Image 1 (tube, rainbow, N blue to C red):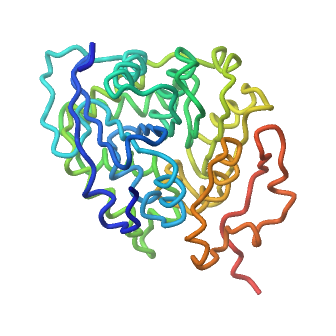
Image 2 (tube, rainbow, N blue to C red):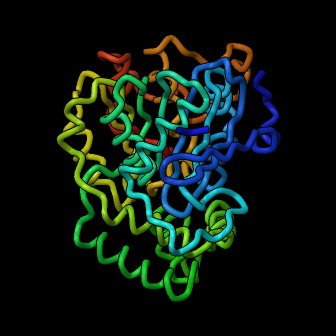
Length: 344
């Protein structure tokens, strides 16, 4: 057994309350932001990330923050040993599987006395939340999945993960491990090269990776590399599902496979051009309009007092109407162009 929105973006990550919850598979850290009387949105990050390194870009985007914080109380779940300031986990402790981590979520919801929740996950976190939705359908209102996994690792991914595992075991989060992780998260456009420096978001992520303990990342990576195929379970999902994936993500094909297995009446896919896996950090503005339409299906809207925010290139007036034609859950999203051409 488990034991009013501010629009000042700088305070979003300072005012949250940290909870350490004992569960059947160990302690888990949950950061809570917002009014707990509001509906709950839980988040789960990818490998070696936490709520700051995986979701900060999205919540620092004013339009996205207003939409999410106006409608939800946010519960950021960290994988074991991935929270800020986490100490190294004892190597003798058993390693929870991704199935264990999905079951752990029900203990978290019960701890906070939450009913059905909205879920947002990135890559490995998206897999865990999808598995949770399959096993506990009555506790999930909807899924927002970013570059999700749903199949067992391919041989290519399995070998790469094994190489990273060996590096983590002997050298911790060394330079080569960081490069592998950054390639997992970001497109080459922001990672830079010999002529173009890497972007600020990549530099910030690189610094945050310095804080991760190698043994903690290794344990989560081991669980990811042992995951099973959950494709068959996806066919039983009835909650609305919105999938984002960068067209430069190494998991692009996995997202296409996943959307093909979901019920078309309840699911939609947004492919983000010139973007890697972590759309929440690399192109968070690309998520705003699709989420707007997605939440309309639940009767949720952005507050009208923010209507004077300057129009960005992703506002409805800048997107062809046929790309956002309503169907079933209030939208049908074809791949949208999220970067305007600079050519005359």
